Each structure stands twice: as C-alpha cells, then as structure tokens.
Length: 151
Image 1 (tube, rainbow, N blue to C red):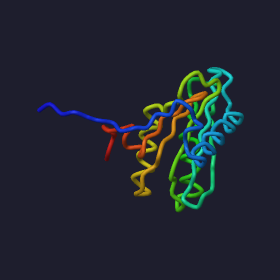
Image 2: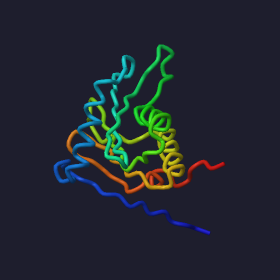
Image 3: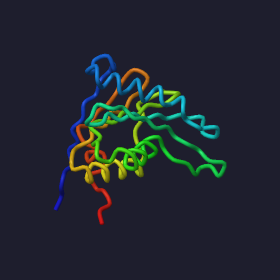
Image 4: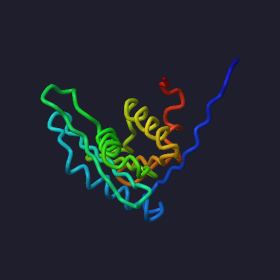
C-alpha cells in the first residue's frame, strides 16, 4: 500500500525574523564553531542547546589524525549533555557552520542520536539549522528521522 510522508518545517529567509531566544541560540552555535578542531575538512561546526532550566550548552566538531574519524558538533554536545545534564531536558538545539555557505543540516548519525535523546527525555527537541542568513526549524527531531532505528 502506498503511503505518503509529510514533513512540517518553518523556513526563515532572515534569521532576524526568528524570536530572540532562537537568534541567541544560533549566535551561541556560531560562536561554538571557534572551538572546532577541523584541520582536514576545514568545515567548522558548532551546536548550542537550550535546556529546560534555561542553561545554554555548546559543542563543536572534532576531527582526528585518522581522518575521517571524528565527532560531529551535535553528537559532541548531546553526549556531553547526557553525561552531565541528563535531568535537564534539551528544549532546542541550533546548528551552524563556518564557513556557512548554506544551512547546516545534521548527518544521519546525529539525527539518530537526536531522536534517541528526544525519546529518553520524553519531550521534543526543536532543531534549528542555520546558514549565513537563513534558517530552517522543525518542532521535533523525530521529523528529521522518520524511519529511525529502534531496538
């Protein structure tokens, strides 16, 4: 039987059209790119998450001498969150890159990890994918991974 999948998202041609809290989160993600270690790809990625308490935490991508081994900014942030703040749920996460030629979308492994955290905390995680001037946002990570891996 043929099925259809519809994905709801919001697109902003200008980040300034977003609410102040989301703009602040994007700025924190952009700032986190400075903590990136990307000597091989030269593609620095930062992620920032707003927790239920209001705390903002950040992560950046890390490359290894055995490139392409490394860890994306999103998973760096999510694993640190789960180790240190698991009882303070993530409400939203923003992802940004430097250079930022287009919006920064999470890879498949990051999408799966976002959905795993969302499932564990039993509340949605808004995902904001920012570019140099535009952004796309989904209300929950699950939207990015409709056919996710489940045990």
